[in-house]
Length: 181
Image (cartoon, rainbow, N blue to C red; front, side, top):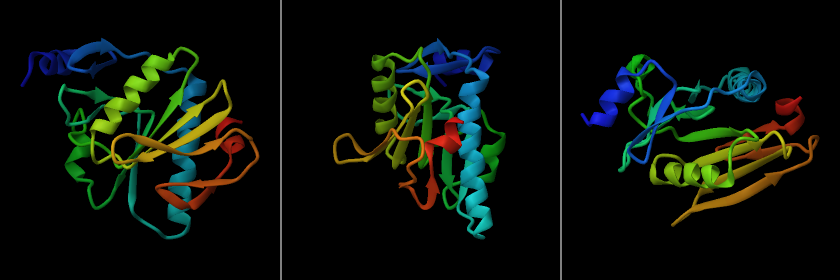
């Protein structure tokens, strides 16, 4: 176990490991969390209403991206396909495997450099198939899917009332109004 990992595990503070270095993680506002919670509720409800199992969703939970240099992040919302989920992970900090999908809610304090570095860290974790970013200030949602060498942006939604479907949930129809109300 690395020294950084030991300090991470011993810390009682909200921290993450960025490129092998321990860093304080900002505490999200209630409005920030509401966006992620609405999306989690909507996805979970849609799957259960149709009798479809297949995903576990976790919010603001530390996840080891299993890359070098070491990265432990707490995405706003992460989804694991059930065929990859191990029950023991529910009791482990951090979860020892990257998710299949995740969503980050950008806050005004997230600089463009921070956003790009985070997307780069997520791309390094091969299991992540798609990333959604929701920018509350810009009233937008962007969807990125794994390309051969980098993320490919496949969808941008900027109209609050336009219904959209996005990978990896093509059966779920959403609007930004549902998430940002």
